[in-house]
Length: 142
Image (cartoon, rainbow, N blue to C red; front, side, top):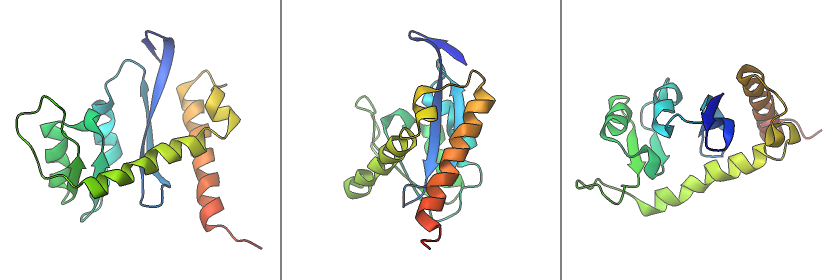
């Protein structure tokens, strides 16, 4: 847990697939910048993947890391960026999948209210909820 203006907090960073199902989740302390979770999220990224991210992840080293893995970054540029990159608005609209993923995760009361004190226990509950999302999608209907 990290200290922020609101008290002791953690942030959940997630990588989801095209269906909005979680591939990887990382917890960081509340005061840590979002971009610090990128190396852990992109570990094992397959080639020919398009990575869609918001302006918080607009950094040259993040773009280079994505391109090193033979993937294509589709990240909106910050307003103060001098150099503009190729950017697809239609692909960027798909970024709402991550927002919908977090909404589905918050339907689990234990995730939304965070009963666990330890970050490891909270990450375990996040993974359990992620398994339930996968089972709902690919599980048997009989």
